[in-house]
Length: 211
Image (tube, rainbow, N blue to C red; front, side, top):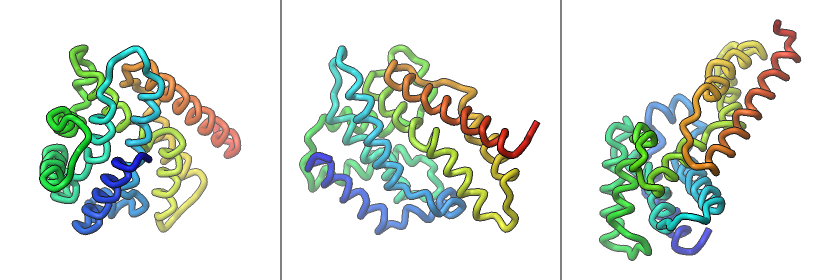
């Protein structure tokens, strides 16, 4: 992670911790899920997508910085309501005391609109926003989604391999039913994730002897 991104990441991490952002209902239900970890992984997904795109002019700095702030608003509202708008406020406050190597207007636009996944269907949506939304969706899917299902089931009082199978079938497997990705790079990653999930479920089902 380059120096400017590392500083922002550490500052956002400290801000989330100070404001107990992981005490939201979702995080309490799944205590293994940390907001800053999600932010870090989305940042990495943006980098991976950018590495695959060479034929379009892209404001890379702005997308990467937006990724680091996109969920910072959970520190303001634990419900997650209006978290995108709140994340913009966090970014604006941060800019008052820090120099950002990116287009502030673009960054605010990306942060504010990253949750509007319906706009992925709009051909006029900017490539920067599209990549941020794709990165956001790519996290916590595939292998990570299967592990989430296992950990979620593991905290229940009564556990079994069959219950865990049902949990995976009702959650991870269902993500393979839709394909929201628009860029070719994201489609390739998404296809690999779907392939992994389907193969895992089929093998698990076979091991359990489920007809």
